[in-house]
Picture 1 (cartoon, one colour):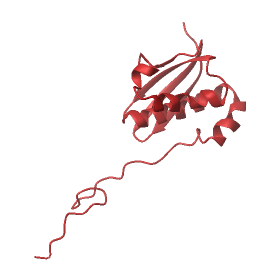
Picture 2 (cartoon, one colour):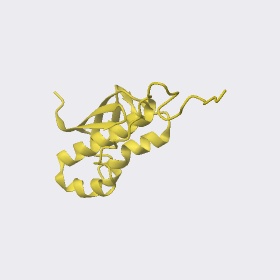
Picture 3 (cartoon, one colour):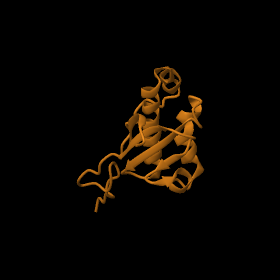
Length: 130
């Protein structure tokens, strides 16, 4: 039986990530795949690993993630948020450095809904006088 040391839930746009920290050598598994396989773009891999770099715990824990909803960028942000919460739950001294970098703040920016009688959220149909 593998025991989870800590867990955290992260959200970004419409993505929700459940992050579990386990003892290990630093592998990150997202939805059953290696992180480099799940995120083909290196920017997203770096974004996910930022909380581990800030707290100097990159090779200490195995990270297992289940993420749903949204796109790749939103999922990377959700994982970063959940991982930060899990690291704080594991060790409260991590809070100061993670909060200073803004990793514990939930990014609440969402896509604005489309309004009726309009082409988009703010774009109107072309006005014709005649």
